[in-house]
Amino acid sequence: MAKDIKTATDTYTYTWTPGSDLCSTEIHATEPTCGDCEDNGPCADCGGQVAGPDSLICVENGEVVHRGCSPQRAADRWVDYY
Image (cartoon, rainbow, N blue to C red; front, side):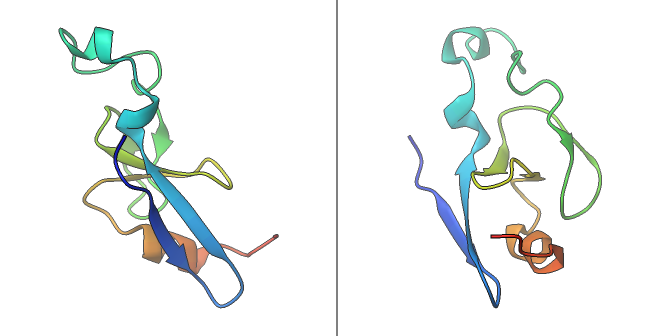
């Protein structure tokens, strides 16, 4: 398991876990995506489609970002409900 990433806004701290932690390692031995990562939805930072295990998923709200995008920029745009 890879280490989680934390991002903080003025009012809340979000935890991001690597998408690969939620994937099937068996399927990824032969396939680039599995049922858990083939369609993760839009990136909360850039808006592009996220697919594959190379992503970060917000533990608190399920939002997802590409590994190369910024979870901090995404969190800074959210209205904190917590």
